[in-house]
Length: 319
Image (cartoon, rainbow, N blue to C red):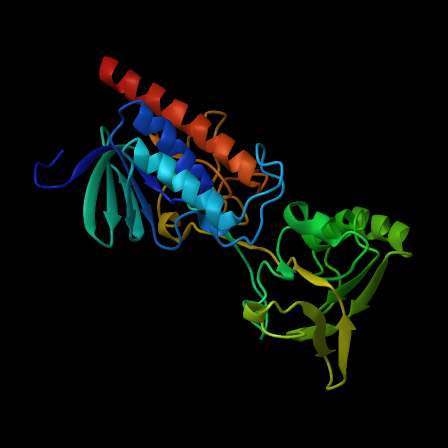
């Protein structure tokens, strides 16, 4: 490695649950570890109002508190967490060149744990009521709406799957589709079995998510304002909550011109050891192909990746 470039054993890109969990394991093993994150430490978990299905917290925990505890634990063992963006990874054989907004770094091994972001509607009220009536994960938040009325927005496979899942809790669901349903035939046929609980409205574009008052004042979502996609007719759907399923945006822009292989959605492909197509570059969490998009599984993958990193470094020493 070049002497005048900062060097570390491991660089973890992304400080969400997967990255922080990996850092807890690597730093406890005295692996010199730096984490880079361009956004919020804790990832999507940190901006989730309440996490009710994370093991060990029988009464639930706020997403911010969970993220803070993960950060504190990683830093207690010596993790160096930095705010900044990684723009490129290059394989240099014995080490990886990691380009960042702070300048270049060298690492013996790299873990990509940048996660994915939910695609948003970009309409008034959506951001204001995020986690307080607007949600993007049925498994995470559906149980808050037992015997409540819901609006689900989206027309692809995930929207239909999640709407059907939400029938376990909701009294009724209005499925609002901007144009037409673009799901698999199997899911479309399955949807027919839920006519008593799911009403489909095709050709409606969401305009605004409305609450009874501002979220800061304890406001709650009361309706979704829409208009006909091919006209000016407006329609409001009364609801207790809104679930948006219009896709995910994997945070993989910085590897798109590298040898790292992505699937058709832009998620990173790995082998059974969580290693990417570049030897010594691993991947864990919601940015990985076939990830389950749950905090608990991201934490588990982070721990697994850390153990694989240790094995990789031990093998490199022997060679």
